[in-house]
Image (cartoon, rainbow, N blue to C red; front, side, top):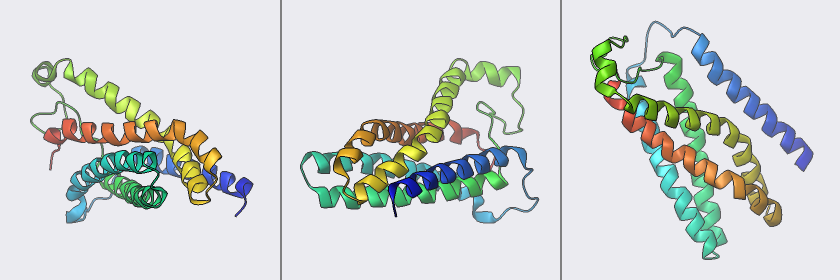
Length: 188
């Protein structure tokens, strides 16, 4: 596969994923839900936590010059991230957004609920917003980094990883934080 074709493929994949995620916000959920659907947020949180740890381990491996372990760790992280994306899409197909602070799980934030969460709500939305924006940005960076690394285009890999690694790590870590902050308000 040549670089030009792969880069076009990266942009197509990124556009398709972004379109699907946006469509999930607009399409009403199916009326019947599979019973496993409520396990997905917990699995997704676990995958994000695992990816965070694996990204740090990957950095340690490459700093020690262990290219093989670095590659294997990144392949595992990449596969887990792909599984995360499938589970995220599947969950949000069936379940719409949970409202942060919805203590009684009725889908409506009362004045008392808003007062109870206070400024924590702004912190949550800041973390969530940066997480979402950077998740969109990092997808093509990860794909290009992964391609360059697998093809041993070391100089080009290093150039892109300078940007993709910290963003990917931030997205993975904030994914865990978002999960921990929103999970008390799940209505299931």
